[in-house]
Amino acid sequence: MSVVNLNRDNFNEIINSEKTILLDFYADWCGPCRMVAPFVQAIAEENPNYLVGKINVDNEPELAQEFGVSSIPMLVVIKDGKIVNQSVGAKTKQQILAMIEG
Image 1 (cartoon, one colour):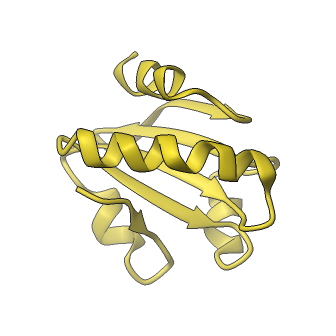
Image 2 (cartoon, helix red, strand yellow; image 1 turned 90 degrees about the vertical axis):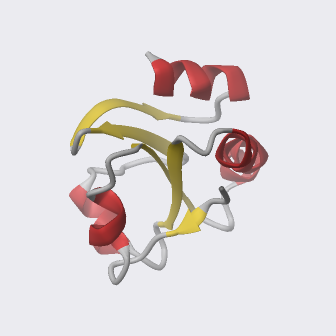
């Protein structure tokens, strides 16, 4: 499965998924976000049991505010509708997978 670009219009249908969700809050101008992007993409493609979404904080400031994003990249893991893990800053693929599985 590929990464889903999330916005206010499609967010609610995604957030209620029964799958474990990984959200990547990013901006196009953010260097560390560009470093994390290939890892997030690979995780989405290699793990169809996860739902992976990207949220551009410049285009979706309300969603970023709802999740308390103060720095990017910010990764959020949601299981059963609840945030179970979150992290700010660039991470390796292994670190991101550990967040999801942890």
